[in-house]
Figure 1: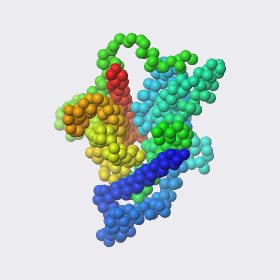
Figure 2: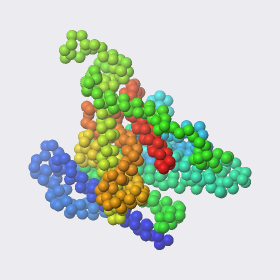
Figure 3: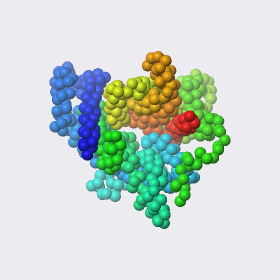
Figure 4: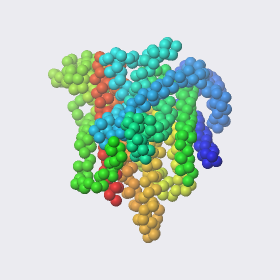
Length: 320
Length: 310
């Protein structure tokens, strides 16, 4: 137990270090901007006085380290500043987009699991057969399709040729659950079609190992049917690595869903980030990057921690 | 049910297999991939010499026309008395530019990014990983902590941040992507250096009084370079996708210059009437990425089986 506490302590310390690095880098990068940020904000027809006023307002005359300190203090209070374009508070803008991104991530992972679990089990049950080889080859090829190409293919098939699902047009939950889900099916499927491959591979190799254990032999000698053994006995102990990489992928997707949100016009955080990049809305970009990175690091931390709770043997093997 | 119990790797120990040459082991898919990559690289290199229109030449009469259409109206400023009709092999894009030409010039961007970034990662990350694995101790802890911090960032967002703040052009994108590959290369290099450093010939080299630099370059490097290069091949395909994603979002090379991702994004608007505008560059991108993956996979297989024989 003591080991568990020190390991958690160490990880928390590292998490803290990474967050400091993240904030520092996001902050310092603004100083690398081509041209003076104050001129950019004040607009093209600004007078010198206007520019100075902006500089005063942002505190750009003060030394970097003091500005960084103040900024950190503001963040700790939950104040990420205001958008230079719309005057909307950054944190509010991000939080209003968050549910869309979360729904997309959760649905896509459910789809990916729905593909990966059955195929992974089939491949593990009959390794090195035609079925396994074919499925593995398809998976390998699908790994070479970039997400945005997958998006184009899905739109072409399901929205243009078959006309089953809308390609764009986000419907909020208030507009009816079914319509809301319909607008998420293609984007979620788009992520899932690429993400299921690593899931399937991990499950396959873990499952092949599990199927050689004695308790499986025992179950077989009892005469239990194969499907029962596979789903009731073998699946659970084979899921550990799958759960870990699932967690990592969820963390990754908070920022990685950018492309999908753009293709399918979903108003999530990624789209907010890209939109702000094009309108050169610095405060918003800074806020988005900070938010996404902290979310990513925290999710990774939680997954890592959750993993040790799930299987205490990992702690032991690490401390040895 | 016996299929589950039998470990296929154990089986092969008892069956004597005819020794295959390395070339045979690589398989058909490897050679097909090599052919495709050679074709892409070759046409990208000699693009300027090919009898093609300018990649930003706009044919107003032929916008988003299907593959095989012919240029009917001659350009007004043509100096030739009777210009030959030009056939758009892959059709034209939404602005009436030749897709075939843009595909070849766009390949330059993908290949430059895909081939240069892993070299940055290989040099810097490989060196750091070798130092960490060779000296271990504090240096190792320090280098690996720094690498973990870089890995802790979500890659795409960091990339967007870098291109946003430092400005979008090819050099910046290559540097940013190269930077992102450093941690993973250093991990591969470190792991391999750790195992090689324990071997007897390193001790022997030390015993006869060789200095650290000599051991690192002459003894360790030749033994870890192969796995690093195979890893680099996977990074190549990953980087081509990353650049494709950036240019799809409109954050790679600036507008008139063609890039595959940009061409795909452009065709998205006319997907229902002229799907070839998107699908032709998408196919090129897919084939190139798949080829690099297949080449990497085949080479890894050969190296793994070589290690097994030792």
